[in-house]
Length: 328
Image 1: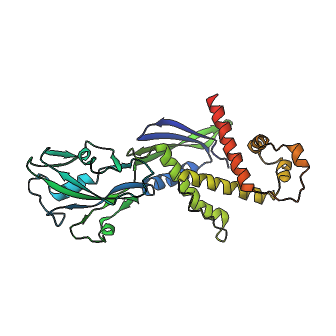
Image 2: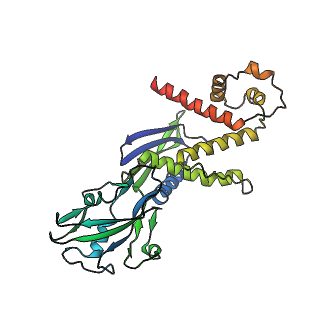
Image 3: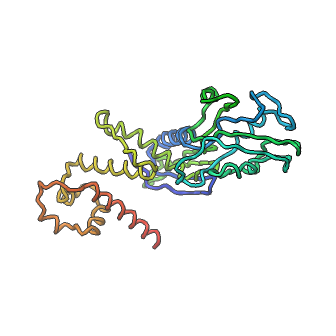
């Protein structure tokens, strides 16, 4: 069994990314590719319209005076609008937005509703919503919320104060398409390993690189249960809301568990262990002013104090070293 040593970005833009992951043990290309694909398509968060309300319209099969399209066609168009939250610092995001369509234009596109939906950026402003007569005024209310994957209309039917609200099925996922290809990979002149090429297309609300990180984080959270066992299930504190912080927390827990299994309880124990690869840790320990000579005088029975804080410093310093190498 070998672990992947390289993740190479073959192509990357706001909407499309292509990644090469190698080397992988035989069969792991399909295993990892399928897992990431299912999570990317079904479990990433996004914003979408989940109900619509138009003055004077009671059901989705109605015709609107002065509008060429019927309500069903308008709903199909509205479902294609892609939203991106302008910034994450909003304390509270409104659940519905009211839009007034006046006499100024006959052709209404997704870009025409941007002025009323201030919290979001519309990613496909040229999308046609409806055609109307110039003297026709419309008042449309859209319900927008955050969700995961696909939610059928039956789920959205149970709305509070639902008089006049027409629920629609909702596609929250920011992922347009995910495909992967598995090829053979050479390691030490042996062509028995896999290389995984992952192609991710998004709607632009998230980059393919960040989408891949989020999907990996979700898988890590689920597999951690099996690693720790049922009784020692790892619970991520609520304060770690950002997915980057969650990955760091999980990495920290994995490192601490590895040291625990190796029966390493003091800094002196850590220095004496030579059969584990602690090259990065040794370098960062020196940055902290902890070298082997200083650690020899430590009492072996003395427990590490503030161990987690020290390890956090080590990880931060490791990242600094990596950045310096890249800049060089």
